[in-house]
Image (cartoon, rainbow, N blue to C red; front, side, top):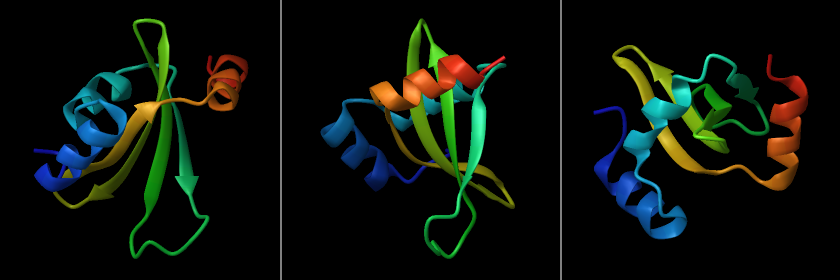
Length: 89
C-alpha cells in the first residue's frame, strides 16, 4: 500500500479523495514532478501536478526504498492548474 491508512482517512475527510487515486495521477505522461524544498521534512518530498479525466490534481509523495509513499492528494488550485496547462507537454 503506497500510503498510511491514517493519512488516507484524513485525506478523505479533508479533501474527499482516497490516496489510492494517486496511482491515476502518476499515470499522466505529462505530469509535472517538483521537489518540495520549502522546509526540512526529514525526507525528500515531491509535488506532482497531473491530470485525470480533464481535472488537474496535486499529489505529494516521497520516494522510499520500498517505492513511492503518498502523503496527500487534492484537486489543484486554479493557479496550479494554470501552471500545469502552461508547462505540461
